[in-house]
Image (tube, rainbow, N blue to C red; front, side):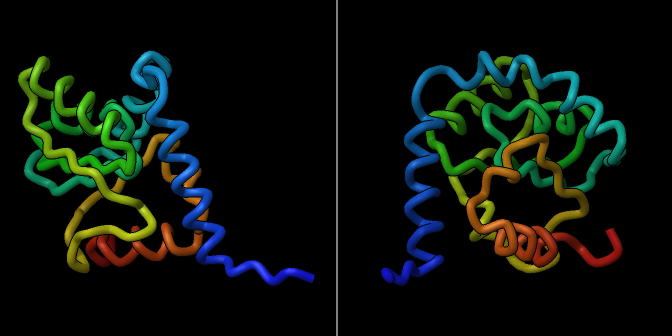
Length: 144
């Protein structure tokens, strides 16, 4: 019986996903998610000035909805092509939001950095769900 290291398997899955999501134009799919992004942001109800993190943001749909509420928004995704599209969308819309290439399973932020964490669909695809969930808890301010 061959033993498989779970961390190696998660890395392999993550790398395969990056390649897959980087192909084609995901923004065409994301356009179908605008209603979901608006519903999520309305349900969470972030307020102006709050620090909002959109995990696995794709082309930035939920991040841009939160930015329209004058939140301090950061969107992350591990696919550089999607982050490029998110930046272009923010610029074209005249919205202030920061986007960076990062992985929800290993967030590059200090503990307690955000008031609100959003993810329309993306974070559900993280191969290591426990690690992604732990990272969300780590970077969200207590009591939020």
